[in-house]
Length: 193
Image 1: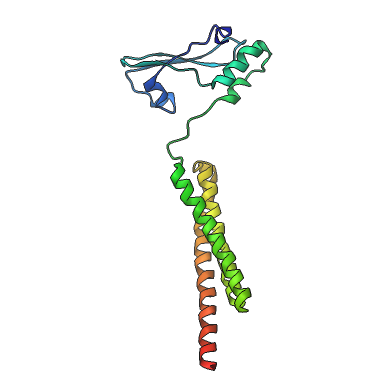
Image 2 (image 1 turned 180 degrees about the horizontal axis):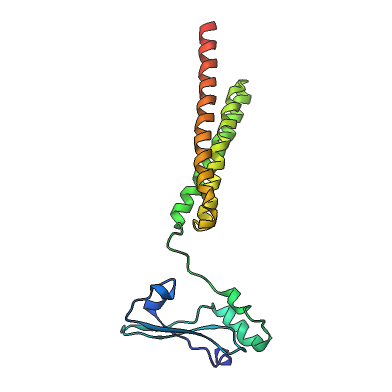
């Protein structure tokens, strides 16, 4: 099937695939990028490196996309095959464990809000509902941070950093006020008893 793409070379080097862009490649490597002929819109990397370890790796397209391009031949519109490319994550992408911590923290926060709401209903003390409401700005802060990280800390979304910090300050103040109201009610109840 791959022979249907005669102008596609499948050679790349291990050192070339370790970098996310050609600008980051070491100076000792000479890499030339060119486009295949119009019948095959697959990007080609012709690599000639001075490194001793070479490995044959497919171009930037995964195997199913290469097979689809080979089967369709010239039927694909320009750029369709490039839609199947798998891009390397940028260096500032969060790792899977870091995402697990972010998501679990948000889930814990929402769970705490729900538990406080149920506690308010069980004890017939509406001030605990105020604490749940006071936690909402902090939840918004967490969502702003997760959104910014989801888009790889894009400079276009840098305003989310300001939103997140403002919501953190507001959330700290509202949680303090709600906690003070709970404390004040407990002191009033203790003095009346």
